[in-house]
Length: 358
Image (cartoon, rainbow, N blue to C red; front, side, top):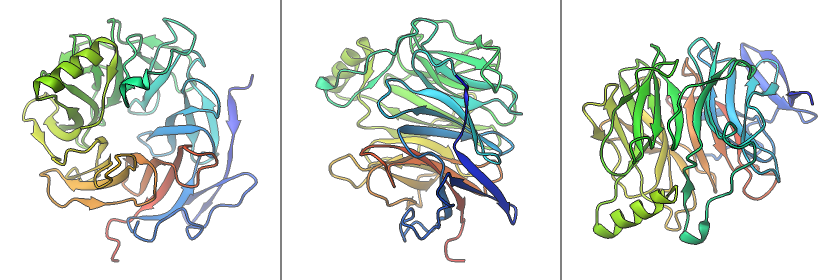
């Protein structure tokens, strides 16, 4: 089967790539895709239109996205790339097992993602939700590198246990990722070939979702640390089953060598998917802050010192996995807005407006 699917057409207007679905025309920003309060976003475009699509991240030249996708009714996510000029999407994972957390190497000549296919080509079972809302930490996840078309795969991690959530430094040959190799969910760095693995965190709890700052000197991540005896017992019980309860996660920043850890948020909510603003002085992240049911997630922005919290999105449902283009002009994120089926998550791109008042 042809691994390339063209889902979008494009035209270059005034230097801005205008993406549109076929056969529908490019969507006007006044068609309901933007809430009137979302002043930081302009000229929004929907890039995917069905199924579950999320964690879309730019190549360092800003011309491509890599993301995970699961078609309506299918069992496991696979990794795709999207060329923003041609609209061409390409399946770049094997189509087997479960995949997650993809990213481009600097120069976009290689890609990273985590996969279970090398242990079992079948899709692993979904987590047991009878224990409440939990995430599965499949022990068969390992991190692989490949060419942008998916060929020439090389396995980078080899330890038994969850290895995933890998992203690359924008300035050097350094990958940051999450692993259970030492018995708990900790953050590590390694070289792009899998060598020189270094542990950065060591506190009981879930340290994960790390990204480098634009200058490569800092790492932003989210953590959930059990404190009471009951919380610690629940955390260890679930961890032994390969599960985690992500109900309380806070955003942290540390130096790239693991020193100077600083907590940024302190709201008791589920805060995740943090990413640095192009200035390096702010962080965008997704949170259910303010929703008493804990089910609605919006994107917020905050200064690295924890001040100046600002809500960016307001659409009901889920908005998350925010990322800026390398030049800071565009903003990509996943959202339930304009869903074709209840719960569908799609990828959207918009121009970023730094000062909505201008």
